[in-house]
Image (cartoon, rainbow, N blue to C red):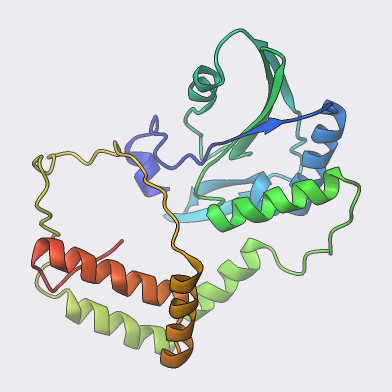
Length: 245
């Protein structure tokens, strides 16, 4: 919320997805499926306000989803670029969806702000969309995000959290270390979100070894891979104090 506030026109935290829909397409059914999911997940009706200096989650119970439709002569890449635009975090919903027909092909284009979603959430949403669209039923939800937020806020006031806070404040008592990567360009004065992503896969043997390692060490896959990532950064930079955001 705060970072978006620094640059309200930024799309750095947008999470767009484009799906090609093969075969016949039922736009009314797609719209009804989204309506079902919007009703199910409060996050899809969430917006934020600052009240008495605190950032507060608000849920718009009156919001009704309406699927946008478009027929275009542009390429799907051009349409996607135009579709991804800044969200106003003070207005629900913080996601949008559209069906676009391009040269006889149909695409479902979705965009969400990271403040209400992440990669795991997106995966859940897609799976639920497929289930509902195909006539299936979903188990009713026992918890919404606000329930987690309430639990977390209580935890933040606990004695255990105070110990954790004291530890990290002491750790960063001097300065937070800056990673000095030997890149071919200087670090810019103003943060930029320009970049690229590279995807790759590891084979089943490596995955099996990693799972064995987590069992032996009583850790999670995330902890093991993050450790490997830290070691890689250490090898590149020659530093030992490394902060990964």
